[in-house]
Image 1 (cartoon, rainbow, N blue to C red):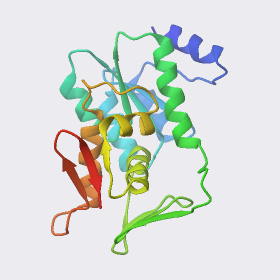
Image 2: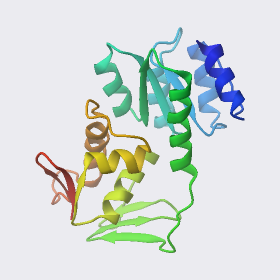
Image 3: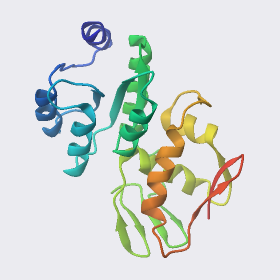
Length: 213
């Protein structure tokens, strides 16, 4: 329940706002005052997918963990494609939710350990300080998770990157072979990095993963 989740997060030192109305959730999310947002797919008033689509359309990059029922596979995919960073299926243990949230917060806030401030592969440039990405001099707008996926692939340019490597490096927990989380994010990233008319930089290595070159 909502109360259990709030208690679990508060016990770990987090400040938590909880609302069960889609309208109020939209107001809070658009305020951009939060480090992380959890969104239930089904909310009264305005559903979670509409809230997610809206905040992404106005440029709010806050990481979002979507919550959905076990049977809603298509809805989970829609949530990820709309800009969600991760999803958790109900019912779930509050501790697992906390672990997912901690992983999202860690990767969104962790400073770059390397002295290197930019990555460059061919005509693709990624600035680790400003977090801007360009290809052929054109700016590319990426969401935080897309940025992390691209950063990892650029650090391993020319090498086959497996789904397991991506999952553990970007999401921060063990790979679930039953999830299509990586495929959805990679599909979103490819549309931005490899628009029609240009030579694709991201290739699928059948049965193995992906390669950027």
